Structures are given as C-alpha cells and as structure tokens.
Amino acid sequence: MIASSERCGAWRAIFILTDLDFAALLNWHRASGATGTVAVYNKRVDLTLGVVELDAHGNVAGYVEKPAFNYLVSTGICCFRPDVVRHLERGAHCDLPELVLRLIRKGERVRGYRFEGYWLDIGRPEHYEVALEEFVTCADRRRPWRS
Image 1 (tube, one colour):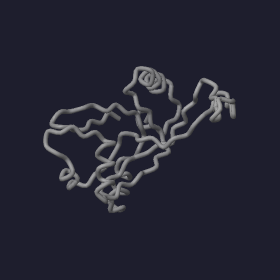
Image 2: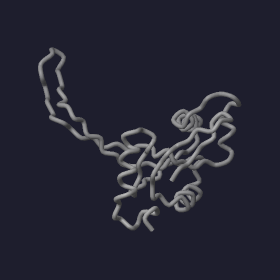
Image 3: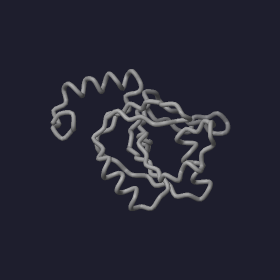
Image 4: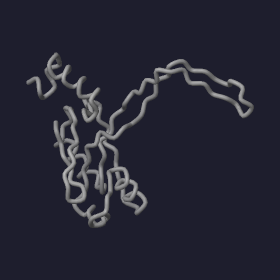
C-alpha cells in the first residue's frame, strides 16, 4: 500500500506495506463518532545494548542485558472528520502528532484503532530492504500482494 497525504498545499508520500482493511477502519472511525482515528500497531523494539540504572550516588542499581520494549506506534494511517480543517492554519506547518495533540487540547476525541495485521513502514532504507524480501518470498497467501 502506498498512501499519500496533503500537507500545506504540497504532497508528502508515506510508504507503507500493509494488509489493513481500510473499509473496516473507516467504518470503525465513523461509528466511534471521534474527530480523528489513528491506526496503531504494537511494535517490539529490541535494544542491542545492556541498560544500566544508577542510583543518586552513582552506584549500579540495575542492569538489563539487551532488553526489548513494546510500544503502540502510529502506522501513519488516519481518518479525520472533514471539519478537522478548522483546526489548521492556512500556510502553517502541522504534522500528524501536532494535529492530534491540538485536537486533544481543544477537547476533541481522537481514538486509536488497534491493528494486529501486517504493517511495515518502508520509508527507511533498511525497512525497504525487508519489504522487498518479504514481497518476493512471502508464503502467507492472506496478504493482498500474494493473491
């Protein structure tokens, strides 16, 4: 899936490989009544270093070798009601995190749509290489590019 978003009158490409059901996301968003919906994905981040915790006196208080963390990350896929444009200033830069936080500060409801399917942000060279390999060798027939 290659999606694009309009920002300040210019186009910015967002490159994503996913099997997210966009119709289901849009229906969920509309049914929620929220101003905005951000599709979120549980992402594991492996740290390849040992993490040391020091106390106030510089003594080692903890040590975890190569920990892993799980975060809910934005997939870069969002739905907004059309009237969200009233929260934007003509000609002013406003990226997605800024828009979401602005909506929340103004009392608007923004929901998170938990997505557990396949998602890969291929905007970074190392992720693009993974996508190329998976696209060619993927054996999972559920993915739309393997039908």
